[in-house]
Amino acid sequence: MHHLIFQAVDHPEDQEIPYAQSQDLIHNLLGFDGLDLEMEQGQNPELFLLRKACELKKWKLSGEYPRFFVQNQVEVTLSLKNKGFCRIVNARSHTALDPLTLDGLQMQIAADLAQAAAWKSDPTAFLNQLFEQVQLLCSAEGEPVLLSEIYQELSHKRPAYRREHFGLDLNRSLNSGRTKNKSHALSVLPASQRQTQSFYVFDTAGTGQWIDQIAFVPL
Image 1 (cartoon, one colour):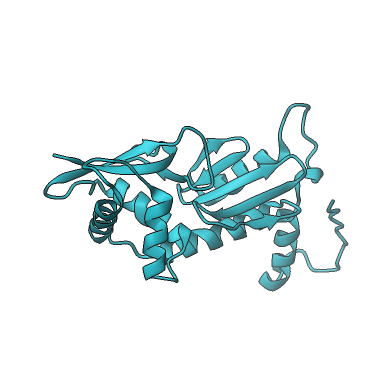
Image 2: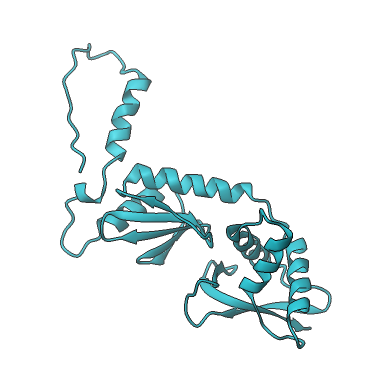
């Protein structure tokens, strides 16, 4: 738990505090964690910190406890033990935030958002790749194929192609509305439950769901 100690310094009242010194104060003020907050019974300090972090940065926050999504690109999972876990949506690994602090949340979410923005997607080219792989993997027209199998095939061809890259490409393709080619339309199948091979996607309205299979249905 952080304790902020303010020490009186003999400065003239009209003298401006140097910017470099004021940053230490700002860092300490933002460095409080969930244990520093005196919340009423039933209130969640970790969720308060996440909401406040997003409010200050004007980030969109969705989801429900314990899993939340920032800007539809970063997943934040909260723990009642003053901890949090942050990652780009659909990434294999996460960054642990322990203790969970306001400035720690803001810095890690901002870093993950920057990584996501750095990945450039081509929705049309990606749709063609999906169609090609589904045609190779399915045994009948319109048959669903596991997304995990498609990703595995693509990652074999491109070893640097990470799971979150595939998730970003999939989400951007769905959000762009480019879900048809000249002969088929892409269909996503919701997962019955979240599994390790499932991917989390958002539709054009921003509604998220877990899916584990896709199919291309003839037009």
